Amino acid sequence: MLTHTTSDGYAPLPVTLFHDDFDQGLQGWTGLIGNYEDSLDSLLPEYRDLRPPMLSNSPAWDTGSSGSLHGTYAMKLATRPQAGSLAVGIKRLTYRQACPVQLETYFTFKPEANELRLGEMDTHSFGILFDLQNADRRVMPHLHYLNAVEGVHCGRWQFKRAPPQFHDIGHTGKTVSHFHLNTAGWEDLPDGRQLLCYNEIATKQNWHYLRVGLDLNSMRLTALQCNDRIFDVSGAEPMTMPAMANLWCMLNVAFWIRAGTPRRSFLLIDSVLLSADLD
Image 1: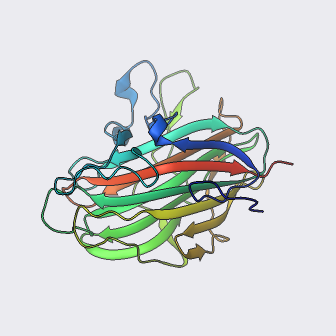
Image 2: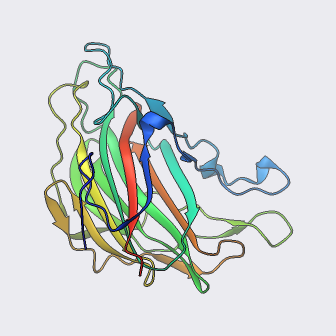
């Protein structure tokens, strides 16, 4: 049940687990790095060039710095200028009770304004995932907005249930690795098409509201809202795999963006609020 609103327009559940305003720094958000043991050469190839988050006041060559929605700085994920390049920001924590939780954020995305054209089809996708574990299983709900493929507009929300292939890392038996952010295995949400605001030139940005609900007891998604649309996630099965050593009560959250062309893509997060409905 939503009980109140915050000064930045969020409607959280009763208990706030964290409320990160990036005017105060990155506040625990960091880059996603693959597992390794003894040598960095043991990293899976897909993890070797994921771009980490940074702080940005949204500079633009024509209008100057616009800042974030509610202040000066946003968390910025910026890919390299190559098709398929990924930038990922993750926050790692644990949960104290298996209960309903809700994440809210304001975001905007666009390719780098290095050309005098809109380029709205140059971003492939952006997404959010949770990485959870209880005593029995590890569960990874994934959602992304598929923006465009090879310059053709898609504009739809998708989920991913197929578990990735696991690889043993090192020789101790304590470490495995898997890459789960590839483009294969995504499925459409029912009635998941949505048009988002790109505005009219490369340097104009409009902020979007995003809300994702999750039940830590069942480890299933319960809600997805983006702007004025609320989507049916009842059939959005998450990736599920056996519990792994050393990950008890894990509650990780990550955002990412993928470039679709040889032009950098940017995802900016104004702030993030994770709330819970504790007993």
